[in-house]
Length: 84
Image 1 (cartoon, helix red, strand yellow):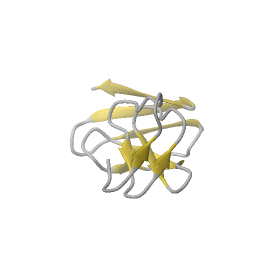
Image 2 (cartoon, rainbow, N blue to C red; image 1 turned 90 degrees about the vertical axis):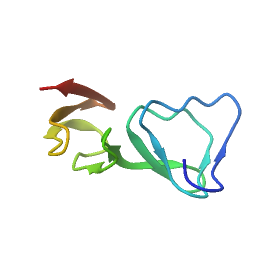
Image 3 (cartoon, rainbow, N blue to C red; image 1 turned 45 degrees about the vertical axis):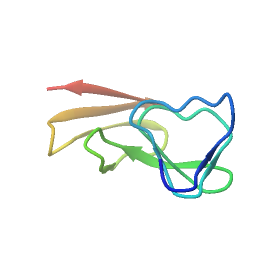
Image 4 (cartoon, rainbow, N blue to C red; image 1 turned 30 degrees about the vertical axis):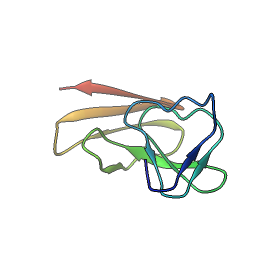
């Protein structure tokens, strides 16, 4: 979570999600999402290693993290992690 970000009561932040500095999060954040802005909006996906993944915001895709070897599979709006 970035400096001076605001999370509204009752909002759930998924595991490994990143919240940018100064963002205002007023809805649930999926796991691995990268959120910025006021109001907060998703601009990408993050790996467990802390690097932005080269995936679309939604749809289909997969990418392999060169640092951990984990495969990140995007299916719709959900990101799944598979250790290889």
